[in-house]
Image (tube, rainbow, N blue to C red):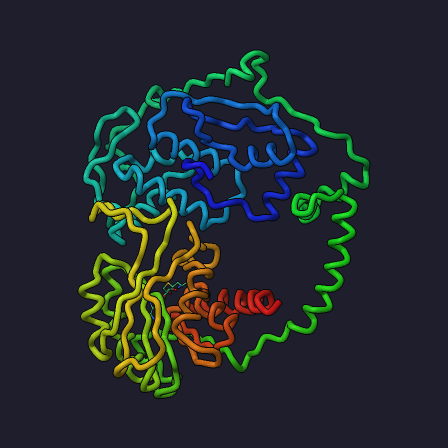
Length: 451
Ligand SMILES: C[S@@+](CC[C@H](N)C(=O)[O-])C[C@H]1O[C@@H](n2cnc3c(N)ncnc32)[C@H](O)[C@@H]1O
């Protein structure tokens, strides 16, 4: 993986599609390097070329950029080209804001090719969570500093704010051809690898066929046949497993501050949850503590994932009705971990606070949990946690048939982990939309994890 790869890996489907396209048409978009030979853009194209034995592909070397400019450039290319989900786009914008919070919304908008209001909305969010500082001034494209409006006011530049002239727009970076391709100076040079039959072409238009060809090194037609056979078998298997156990899962809309009277006293084995982290939500941890004290069984545990910024206050709230037991570490490795500007910390872990109702007498438990690298799963909820990490937490902190409860359900990650691990699950959230998304997602993912 290149250090300038700002996006997660392509999904197997996306990768297969890219591979099929390159096999048929060659590399249409040049692979970009810096002057040291690091890949700025085109990591996946290069991987496909090496798999297909393509040596002659278009290259561009971009020289003279700073580290920040290289990352910005990589983000802009991804933003313009890849089919990103709204969540992925938001993450790219946030990464850019974390890297260069001092730059104005309009300047960042121009750099990333998005609307400046979109940048403003994300800036407000990150400032609110203390992830970037509220900078009083911003740097324009001309390198001068201008006053910025306070965060409570709309991010639109005031009519009187200095406007950049078109001459302020930075010149495109110099493009130097790689020495291997400089000879012919053609950079968008398609490469035809072989001449497939019509049937082969039609098979290779299916990403899953190309993925299978790549996986087991077979022809397109063989791969297609194999997949058809498997799909038939899977349809049969799905009919058998597509019975979501409704009786094991209860989801409903509720505000934790109302006490969650719908859940019986002493009926829950473990609460595993991830409340919002910003300062304005600290009071919710007190409400959580009181609900936990009532609904947990005598030997039950409350596991709370939280941020670091307000840890003392959070722990004070949680201690209202529950006993502190331990702090576990939830590792979040990878280059996309948050940078806490106010604290000047790049963070690669967060606390899993463990509270109990009375003395813990269960099995020994390891206190470090690791989420997969760069696992920012924001497709279902903008604060979504990684399913891989949550499966590990559920496995470690509960037993099959236990009742697991998440009162801040969000996109439903804890629920999927719990159901897939054979637990009963209760999930609540203040927002009806989140409950609906979680319900749908749970049914889909449950079918998958049963296979
Ligand atoms: C950090 S998110 C949870 C994300 C979740 N772990 C996931 O992986 O998708 C926190 C959730 O708490 C919910 N929430 C905020 N205030 C609440 C309240 N007073 N009662 C219940 N839920 C609340 C929000 O709607 C949000 O979905």
